[in-house]
Each structure stands twice: as structure tokens, then as C-alpha cells.
Image (cartoon, rainbow, N blue to C red; front, side):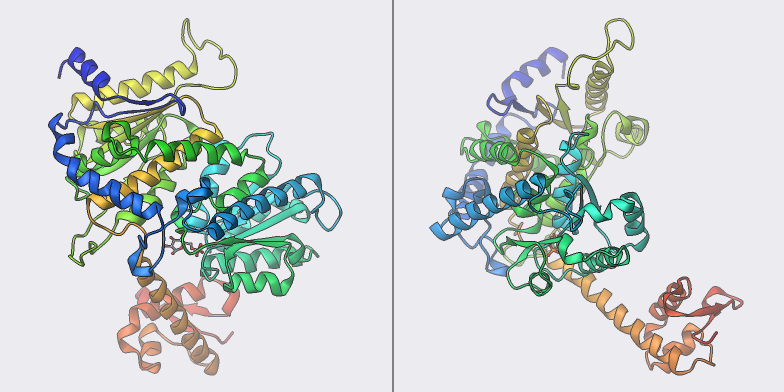
Length: 530
Ligand SMILES: O=P(O)(O)OC[C@H]1O[C@H](O)[C@H](O)[C@@H](O)[C@@H]1O
């Protein structure tokens, strides 16, 4: 298509929301104009389902749950007055807690204000808070934020080393909706040990965000933590960033959570429109459907031209892939659905994998995110007539057209600036797009049955490890190959797992397992004797 024709298509298709200062450009998606009309009946059905969901229908039938993340920024829309009150009361508690911490009414045991924040969580209980902290953080933050988002001991050591003696003025927020996630439990235990080793009483530094009567909830109340904020079963982990999960760390960091919620709320209003062309989430969902044939046939590459949006692709990976990546549709038919999401930031990625995007396997579509405001204040000229920000914009435009020339499609989202409101709007935009797209492809976006399989298998491995350790200790004079061990435990079919467990045990001092090299690595001999 010629440039001027494209310009006509751009004007014809551009969605712009003046209140949010947000645009969605689908002119570089090559669907014909008739596509919107063709999809209209399916889309109207998706709007209908979304309205039912917002009204409190059991939109997640497998778990018999309502799906209420939209109420978090408009409590009056919650289906009962009690829920509305709980949402408002929790928001008030988040603000009151953060302000007490900032004012020093809730202080470190040495009487000094808390200066650092250690957030312990994983998945939806970490990705949202991390995205908010990174996109909106600044040198003026009220608290410096750190994360334990894994059960990697070295990762935790690295964070603790950064905090250093600041631990005595560190507030720990442990976040887990279920309150039983092992990685988070381990992070909490490791944090507790670090506090104790520094002579500090963990409970005086800890607050929880979790479901009522969860394991974490009980621990927090038995140990007398500073407080607990609720998580509800009608908020999914991956859409929990506008609940206490995202709001408490953000408020503590000093981010204006009212503006974040307002941005999300305004975007929610815009994405409730049943007029497809006026609904930016519907336009995204339609673009995804077109690009992937409604079957995930192409990957979504997210290219924000802004360092502060680096973690957005990681956040969206969970939101989109955990919501859409499903074996069965809502009728129980095997569909193997999903859309693969990846990306970092432009123009950095231009010097990494954009080569393949332009010339290699055409199995993707791009979502560019353009941010108009370069920085606070004016910029120096890096050459006559051009700033660094002008270059960033130039590279964005260059990549968009270079890809389009080669028939690589893209959507562009433009926002004026990075602010709590625009981040709230982006989050709400994608939450709604995922929901609408899930309706279009008939999958339940709100459950994650596949996650359980890996968790169960990990439990089995840890149990087998217990048996191995017991056997090694019972016969300290004996050394075992993995095959010996599997036979001795009467689990010959588990020999590979036994090998992997033994190799890991011997690589670490905690369990006192040593290794003697065999001819082949799988013939190594392991022993608990010295
Ligand atoms: O908040 P939690 O209950 O600890 O869950 C943390 C995460 O783990 C699970 O495995 C789910 O797949 C995620 O959706 C969830 O966000």
C-alpha cells in the first residue's frame, strides 16, 4: 500500500481517547475494512459476556468464581454492597498503612522510619508490583523497593546483600493470594532468617497480603505481624495489580495510587463501549484475532520505546499466556489455544533480534508502544536539531515502517507520558482485551489448570529427595550410584530423577552428600559418609 493510502487508513482507523491521551493505531494490520463487520456478531457476544462478568456472573465456572478486578477501581459496580464496602475499606487501609509508615507511626523497632521495602511474592503476586515499581519509581521514592520473586537462594542473597545493614529499616510485604505458594513461603522463611541473624524480630517488620484463613494469614496472625490486607477469590492473581497486591507496595513506594486507579477506571469506561471502533480493547482483540487466525498462529512481540516499560512484556506474558493458553475451550473441546508474548524495549531490541523480525521467519506481529514525552524538562541536542528522544522516536518510526515494508504487521499504542494514570490505563486496556479475546476464541481466561501439574510433580521430586536422604544417612558407609539408589528404594523407573536429585544434593553443602566421580557422570557414586 502506498504511503498516502496508508495515511488515509491511519486516519480512518485511529482510535484516540482525549481524556487518557491514548491512541491505538491498527492501520498496519492488513485486515480489510469488511473484517470489522464480519466479526461484529462475535464481538457483540463478547461484550455481552463481559457485561455479565462485570455484573457478578460466575465467569470462571471451573472454580465457581466471579471475576471482579474491574470493581477494584469502581467499587459501586460490585454486585453487592458488602463487596463494595470491602473494596473501599481495603483501599482506605492501604492508604492508612502507607501513610503511617511514611510518617513513622509504624516504624522500625529502632524507632527510625522504614526506608526499604522487600516484597516477597511470585507470578501475579510479583509481576504487577514489579512493573509498577519499575515504571513509576524515581529517586524521590518514599521507600526503596526490593523483590524476592523466586525460590533461588543466590537470587535472595543478592538482594539481601544490596539491602545490607538497611535490613533493620526494611519492611517486608509477603504477598500470596492462596497463601500456600512454596516459592513465596520459602522467600518468607529466608527473609525471616536474615532478620533473625541480624538480631531483628521478623514480625515487627512484616505485613501480609493474602486470602482469609490461608496458611500465610494464619502465620501472620499467630506471629503478630504488623498487619494483613485481604485478597479475594474473585480477583485472579494476574489481574490483582489494582487490589492490595499492587496498591500496597505502590503506596509504600510513594506512588499516587488514586491516579493509577483513575487511569484504569477511565480506560474501563472506554473499553465498555459496545461500539467496536470506539473500544480500544476490542480493536486490540480483533487485531490479535486477525494476526493469529484466532489460534495463536503468530507471536505477539511487544516493543515499547521507553525504558520504563521494560517489564510490561513480562507482566503481559503472564496476563495473556496464563489467560489464553488453554488445552480445552469452554465446551471441553481440545483447542490448544494461546498467544506467545515476548519483547523488551526499543530501540535496544533493534540491535538484538529485530534482524530476524524483518528478514527471518514471519511468525509474529508487533505491538509498538510510543510515549510522546521524552523526559522531564528539555533535552540537550546530540546533533544539530535532534535530541536523544528524537532518535528514540525516529527508531520507533523506522522500525515500524521497515517491518511493514516486509509485510510484518503491527499495532501501535501511543500514550503521552509515563504516569500513574497512563500505567493504570495500559493495565486496564490489556485486561479487557484479554477478556474480550478469550470470548472470541471461547476459552475460560480466568483459570489456570495447567499450572498445577508442575507444582504436583515438584512435590513428588521433593518427597523422593527425602527418601534418598534417609537412605544415604541410614547407610553412611555405603556409596550409591543413581541406579543403586533407585533399586534400593524399589523405584527403578525413577532412576533419572534420582540422578538429578543426587547431583544437585552433592553440589551443595546443606545435606552433607559427597560424590566420587565414576567413568560416566551417571556412574558417579554418592554418599552421606565423610
Ligand atoms: O498469589 P499466589 O497464590 O501465591 O499465587 C502466585 C501465582 O502462582 C500460581 O501458580 C498461578 O499460576 C499464578 O496465577 C499466581 O499468580
